[in-house]
Image 1 (spheres, rainbow, N blue to C red):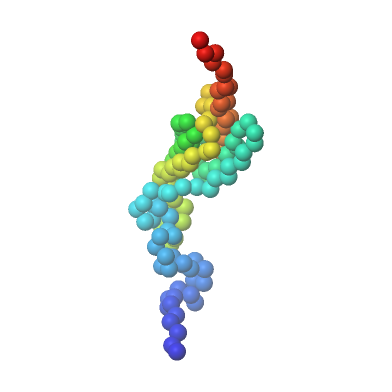
Image 2 (cartoon, rainbow, N blue to C red):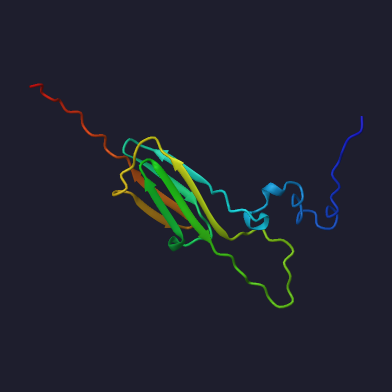
Length: 144
């Protein structure tokens, strides 16, 4: 039985520089493929009173990050500004860093108290503390 192998013309000259560049176009950064970035990494933890969200947003400033809360739905939007720093006589061989807007939305198990929500951004990580909305207490109605 014959086997099929992929010819990599750069394997000998540039062993790792172009590795994977032509394999899967969908794995390219959004700026290179003309698409908007799909998302970013998020960790969500829950305790009895609140949800704590950590989102990796490197390359942004806190002014470029916007958080929206609608009931149990959370949306995080950010914009990464690209560095157009190219010197005279220099050419870019490969660019994996990207620029553009990206967003991530997700629903949590209970409605959130947006008035008490808090956000902190430090070292490229956004931390959201999203308190749960208190369920209204049940009350008895007397029948007349």
